[in-house]
Image (cartoon, rainbow, N blue to C red; front, side, top):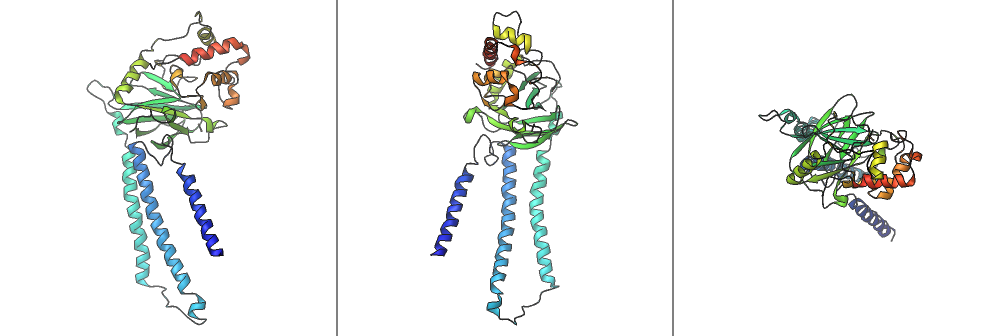
Length: 361
Ligand code: CUA
């Protein structure tokens, strides 16, 4: 009776764990459901290593349990002395050679993948006109947001990375203030963004993000960087190549776009007077990568989230402008202006104006 109960408990525990673990597989954020060639290769390597390690664990456990049961004193008697194997050449050779073979089996594909995925030589390739042949994105991590500049295309955006599917996208990764780390769990990575050097790698985006939750893949900062580290999210919109080209063209068409203090629109006039010093509303800024003080807001209306993690609703934007410290402690906007100087009417108009900034049809 007791035995039956224990088995039943074990079975329930396994069932609960299966249900629990099955929730790990959300396509927009799960390493276990890779949506790009780099992520798939890393995932396969992970499975391969775990299989070999599990095999070793099983074989060792079986041998241990076998010896444990077979050589019990109650079975063999008090005076039983098993065969002594100290110094046995055969055994020494077996338990030296087998681990070496297993390590080689692990090392060869791991090293091959590491070198393949670390190959960024194509970033230097140019065509006959001297233009880079590969798509390159400069990522700059800041407290607590992300800037994405496309130096060859002359455009910059923030918080939402937009990339084409089916080709290698190369990244120059750096940080403007403290160490952060760039990670898109479903796609591959991660890699640190440092202040003192530029890290490079590439990712491949195989799937369009449109059908996913919020229409995006989720990206994360994975280096503890301050009180709002856990809120330092970004999103990734992956588009078919033609749609990406159209997006680039509409981003480039924002050249010269600005906000005017003389505008009859209260929101635009307020923005021009108080926000334009830090936040651009044109994605063609001509500034070097990483130079922007605050996130570029040209595509604010197209984003899926506010401040990287709040729902994309005007109310959240109003609350954010009124008290950014409450939503992202330690962020640099808090001390850049005094929200009390705005009337409710001005904040409301400001939020309407910012939500209206868009390059998508
Ligand atoms: Cu930035 Cu953690």
